[in-house]
Image 1: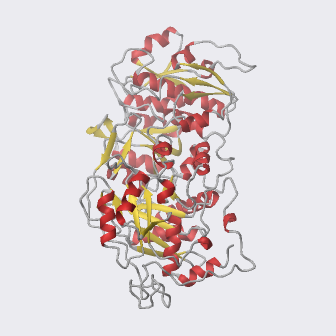
Image 2: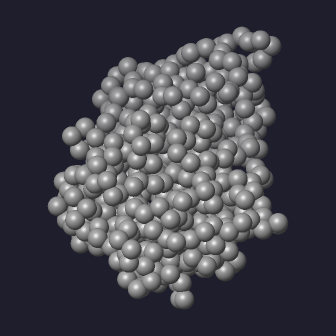
Image 3: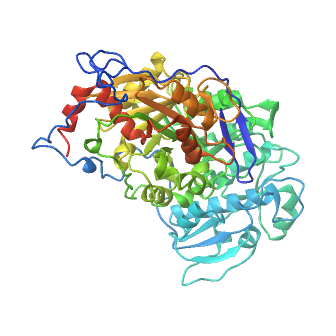
Length: 635
């Protein structure tokens, strides 16, 4: 089940079936090696009366050729992982366009005022897209920023050069502005005219106009406001009032870039700035807002997906359809769905991304782990880290910086590949404010997809290799050691094929954490193994439990229920992995605070550790000889 909140708090989700989940069971270790516990009898019991989790081992001295563990990362700003369009320069100065992102009526219909409703939103998004494209092309030094009061956007805005002034989109396109500090700042000079749409009479006309906007270098004007812009002397360059999305595809596909795609509902203005600035095609799945009853563009979507570059990103979301209708199709086509629907200013937030020095995650040196300490080790991690718009909105304040994170060693998946391409300033902030070393994972490898069906309808081998190489490059650049993935069936042969691809592409990958789409803990806590090119076995750890409000299925439930279940079934087990559903709240607790309540219910024999430490404890328990060999190569 996936549940995403927009900026006004409205939720949308697709229910998922709940099935029985087993606990993470201990194995007998690698052939000829020890059992998981300190016992030598090959089962999960301890022969000396200690708790499971104890391993009698001495970490070897580092070899003379050993490298510093903290120095194991790549310093290259771009090693081929950048695939999304981004802004190559920063504006010398910028206008702030107001009354958009922070307004709840920005996508509303039935409003007559020119600075209200979807009509105004489309106007502002298209104007910003055209001006920011001119900035990228060197035709101006000025950019347009769509005002957003949230902290991540404010941090980016502070890097853009001085603000010229705060104006509505109507003012920016209507007025003649004199020079400002020696710079020409009159943005109307950068626009050739307008394309006409009718958002109330023909919803898809707004989508067609979004494509025509970059083709004709013209802002989007609705029939509501046509008389006003005619009065300004602006020329209508294209009439989209009776056009459909399919019309736009047939007319303008050759004028669009296939490096990315915007997928959004018809009654939205979000992401149009990014689409216009980068000449992207815009697609709506449902022809009528909020329902598929008015027809769909499913066949058109398949055609567009086949046209996109391999591994291209599809930005946005479709709220009225299940993920099986669009995410699964996008994944099967070898493309990445990036949940970015309620995010803004993508062109300017990406300014300078390719030349930006990657920030580094804080990691835990595996030599510093006390492997002999007995406990039931458990790691808690948050779901939905691939959700870019959420990471740019309330993620930091509500979850990432929450005070309970250190006490429960709470872990997070971050969409670092999307962040480094679209919002490197915010990524820098998140990595700099990381509270627990070893608690960050790369989430899903650049977008939302299922590893077992990824590129299944195209060139699967090529698609997996490209995805794995890009993910490896991003992880190595940011010193991220654990990869978080999602699959429709976590232990299928197709999933194993994908795990092997990720392991073979990245010799610094230490472990994989995987959830199943339905249910998240569908893997039952089992540990699978794949081997990297250096001959080391890499654990693929599935979630054994999920904190999920309202579920009474085994392995899913409230913090108290799961904690008691963990305690009841803990005898002989050494470790557990718990996925905390981001959209579930339990008596006011969510995220790390919910995990802490679960840990307390489980009892004192349980010890919380970050996911990176859990991975190494599993490796020492089940692959001791390999692990000791590796530890001798680092210091």
